[in-house]
Image (cartoon, rainbow, N blue to C red; front, side):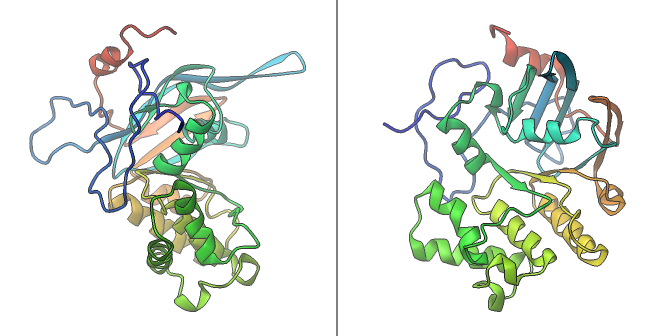
Length: 290
């Protein structure tokens, strides 16, 4: 028996199994919340919601509040930069958004999925189908070619022929600026900028609505970094939510929202306009046990 589909906030029953294909216009509808905004243009769908999210670590008897009661909501098409000094909690927050760690308390929804309630294979499926993650150090598999690295997430998800996998992987590599002559090169034969472009193509493989990036320009030169920034910006303009942890001022300058953190708390939210009213969130939490 296959593992259960993701558990959505406010519904404790198991969801029926659903398979999504690349040629579908949209994934099955998740919860959309609206406000009293003007009817034109239509509101963007909400993809990321955090309310009172905290993460506590205990180390040798010491309690460390890595993330402290943070709240925000982002929509598709937004490019968000998370800033702050080392140790401020920004990378921990990014890992919480990615489902790589669980919040100690608070509510966290990614594309309609309650991350706190995922377990086992559900977590793997969540990351394969809902998210794309771009690492500072690329994390490409050394023994695979650029093409094979991009194909891998699609192979794990299943549902596509080998020919279709290869064609989509080639299309994605071309879209991020990797020439066909480089498709069969292994990471060791690619420059740092080329490796990061391959990593971005891999993050796009299963067409996620949310892209998370941890210092994506940290290991490339400044010229390559600027091209990576423009690529990430284009992904947001195409309708994805792109959230980047960074110290790079070139990312900060083009971000739609700039979120500054210190000691685990959000201290500044520049250009931020909450897309969700409090009543809508309260309805989702009704009946939930904390």
